[in-house]
Image 1 (cartoon, chains in turn red, purple):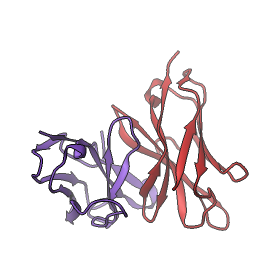
Image 2: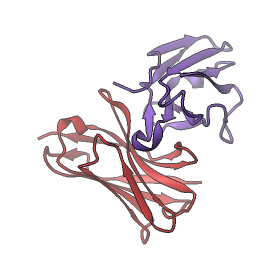
Image 3: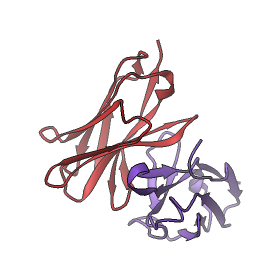
Image 4: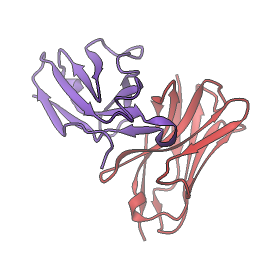
Length: 121
Length: 111
């Protein structure tokens, strides 16, 4: 059974960097037939896909246009975990952030428990 | 503002059937057969219940079914049960640049 355990601060100061990690068990972050995404949910924006990373002989990343200039998603194979960094945050980035595995064509089949991140001074 | 349009709420009595619509465009829902549905009980992780328009993951009861016509997809839940009360979201592949878009969610109330 795949389990995704998220961790990170729940409060971030405006203009600073939001950082979350996702520890993966029951699967490998470098599996060849799946990918890993971060998705967030807020009352104003609903569910929003932020980006993905996946391994197909080498690592690939794709990011949503809305955050492309500020986001980095990395995989740490030694720790079998995923990370999210979102720079220059504003209160608009306040949301519940989910670490998600997907297979096929964006079938998000395993989700982390979610982490509420509030951007406020 | 979500890219896909869902009704804000639907309701039904135990044992009845309800349908939830998800309307997009030819660039997402209408353009691909990669449409999924998620059930979300508040405070828990969302759960994949339908993928590729009509397919059910292992363990999801056949009371849940999906369909699509043109730019509109539908999730039908038959034999409503109290535990079906949740928020439901649709999600569609939207091409190599946008990647994926979600609906705004529909709150299902079991009366």
